[in-house]
Length: 180
Image 1 (tube, helix red, strand yellow):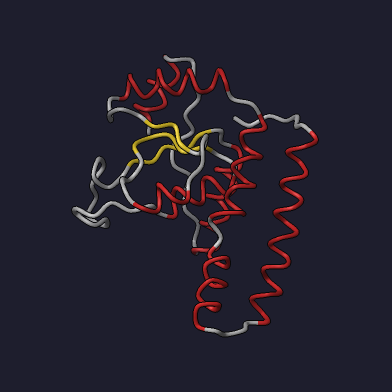
Image 2: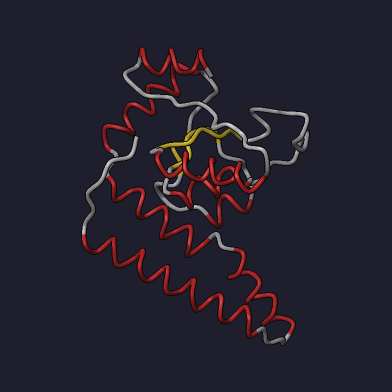
């Protein structure tokens, strides 16, 4: 993180690094969500381009890192997984696709994206995440295929629909605000 922060500073960018962990998963998730809600971009790379012991060695997939960042309003910068979920679920502006893992090239790309960034982009990401990424929409499809009703799910979807309507209405009003 220190090397990335120094390289980002040299490029005129701010890199905050990975958020810390708390004593339990709920608090850790809150820390992560707060950090992402302040970010304009979050870095993430497909497991094919950034392998780790905890990822699949060959199969690429969209992870919670991507969806959580987008739900918080941050666009994801990096190399996206080549998979059906990426193609079907993500929208224009959700990704800042890098050509390689070269840090200098990535920082140049981010600097250009930052120059074009507006608070509206964060609002679009939040609205589209509500519209496309929440699992409850898929559960509704599954219930329909199975010919089942799910009153609790219907109630949840009604609340989700209200949140989506609020998010979309913000897009029509224009936005002012700062994100780092």
